[in-house]
Length: 219
Image (cartoon, rainbow, N blue to C red; front, side, top):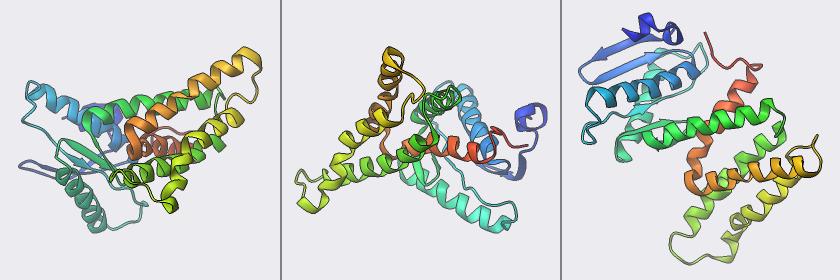
């Protein structure tokens, strides 16, 4: 019903809907938005029953990709969500619980606002990819409690991140205004600690939107 009546989702198309499965095709950013809307609507429908959940998998492809390929890759993403404990969404190769996904969408909005106000620049945006990977590696190498010398490079992300923030944040600002911008951007370090690799979800959403010349939503 919403696909027909809600202007946000008017160009999302149903390939298959039956039982408890749903396969949709649409502009990548609208699909992400709809996934969040669908989960919120489902939570209301089941009266917030934590034992009844849904999982989602989203795959991004070029427009001329065969539907069979879309089906296979999205099914793989869905399987990843289910095998990670269900009640999750997988996109950009990262899996997040729905509660975290909602918070990550808030982070996306924050990053976009920072870019629009020129508090951060594109260089900082792309450097974040490196810090996300270093944070992921840190998580892996510290699991066993022993860190080998050859694996210690990723542990430097904390100091490198602070250096990068000071170099790239608020370049047009001075004095207290610049320091306020730096302090604000240091929130990213907390995001890295909390969300690890899933921080890639909002970051890549912003990057993909910027590649489209600032068009935030596909039609």
